[in-house]
Length: 150
Image (tube, rainbow, N blue to C red):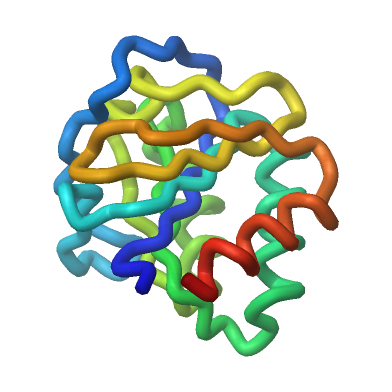
């Protein structure tokens, strides 16, 4: 069964550095502790607005009541503090699912989807086992549904 299911919404370019990811400890949009650690088994990433919308559409279709077995991680490294407090945090707080805020960009330095694509990464103890790219919401939705039913 899927223990942790993450979507990372990334809005800035970054580089794939290694097959092993850094551990991420932080706070969510409500100030509660959150983590990307050895128990994390799936990441869903995008680095631009178009692919973030694609990912959120797929998740909304699969779990319309907001009861998805996932945690979202948001790269806030390059977001000015006033934009974060005035615009992003209020919008992020509308989500029931915890959004782990990555203010150091640690995950963004380790992973790299292309423009307009969503990257699905399967992990085992923070080691990348499989990477797949999606540009189509239907295909992404089917892949997420298969993985979440394991």
